[in-house]
Amino acid sequence: MAGHSQIRVHTGYGHDNRWDVYQDRRNYVWDNNRDTATLRNDHRRVVDQERWGHGNRH
Image (cartoon, rainbow, N blue to C red; front, side):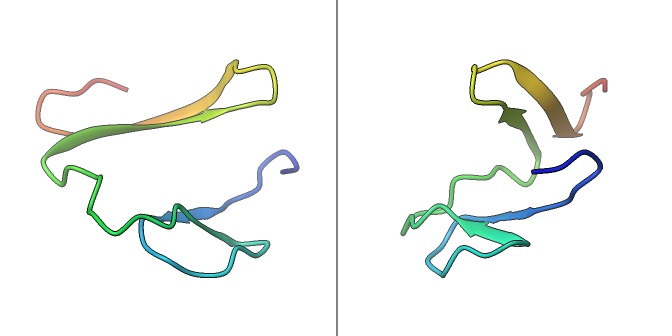
């Protein structure tokens, strides 16, 4: 991904493309009340992180 790019991550099945990637999971993995999504580079370093829910600080 280039800098300032956006991508949507889907839990279910689908075909990955430039804008959407799919985890190919049958079960729901995201918590609507509180969770964290972490983007890492090829060296496992955190590039970005998004948290949501009650009591989370960015």
